[in-house]
Image (cartoon, rainbow, N blue to C red; front, side, top):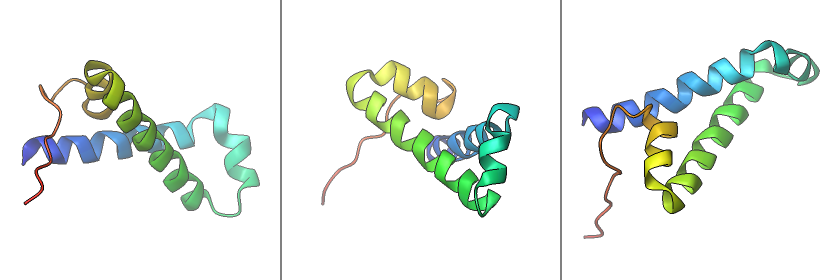
Length: 78
């Protein structure tokens, strides 16, 4: 359970930091809603992390959990 929380919180935290960074400030001001921009950046970061994780699991774990989780999740279809 802790691993799933970490893998959820880390991308949100990093997405917010990226969206609020000085480099994206002009883009954020141009966006109609700074909140929507932050959500879009966070979603893009998570999506990119998952794509990387499919091909390079170690790098994906670092992107999505800052290395705090030792393994990738395993989804089982019941």
